[in-house]
Length: 512
Image (tube, rainbow, N blue to C red; front, top):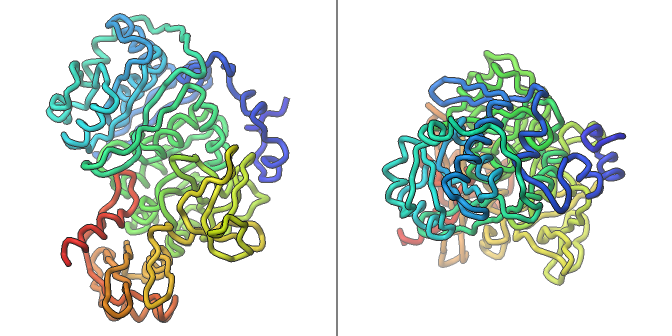
């Protein structure tokens, strides 16, 4: 029988994909299913592994069997401690054996795993703890002081949990239904505003397989690497659950991000499929390490925000393949992709690709009608109850490729012109001396708003504000150049790595 994992073409996806065929990839049924079993237990003895690149240069290597055994021991220990089905078990750990054992052990036992970002301070952690009310919090050693102020009654250090569960059986038979709750994932947000907890049932492992198949191009027996934190959607769904569920080995990154360290790990591990944030690619481009190393990459994808043209060209030149876009939102999941590995769908740089199989995606105008070719409107996806707008502007070209034209709330209107902040940023990032850029609209008595750009120069580069302005005028549009430019050392970002324009607007508002 031909499985979806045996096919790689775009046309194959459109012809053969169905929910029934997706379920053929898993052991469980629509009634009985356990996420840990699907990600770990059923792939034992297939040579699958989990590798961890530490920021300090260290490497960890665990066979899937080691991780599965540790998760089963944790599951047995949790049951012995009276942790009941549906109880929340929070974990604030970097990728490690303790992280994977706690994540998968909690879900195996019937509890609900709640990953927390390791850079959370006391307030950010406390807000989330108050929301999900975990019975236990497993923390990294260096975060114990913060963890103990969270209000959770029982706080353990990761190594302590592994030690306490060491005597437990490494066999555990799961008994969850597909509709039982398995996982809470908090979206990125500020410490003063509690983001929504996205609640995943055990059947979510089947759902994320769609993105794994067509957005990151994962196939069994690959070595897939995602350097994003598994506390966030990309690192958790795309970097952990999706590839393991399909029988691929994974590699993750622990500690403060260092582009040179990531590049060396990719080379040393012989990673053949990489999915990273656009920021990761830009940071890799800024260091010279890649020039010294051989790579085994066959598929590349990015997410989080658009990838500027110079970085896309650098990645293609360095790794030998085009970088494929992944586009979606927390509310709707991945809806557009470039289908890595599909030879019958050429990558068009700057595009978001085409709709995921089984989805109806369109660009709609304010009247709710389909936009014409190249007409800008809101990217929307069809649901049972009608169209759901993603609050992103976009357009579709004559070949059916989608393009991003900025957030609907990131539009700058100056002197009657409607300008996308993203368009301005892309123009600035084409300047050889600029590493990062963000644009916002600021009040102006004459024009209503003018464009202000915050730019981060590349290391050891002196940039001239007038030169940046003239560069944008010459290479983009004379009316869309930043009339105000501020040189900064860094840009505020969400925990997921996206440039946080809202913070820039708040800072600017406070300065006026």
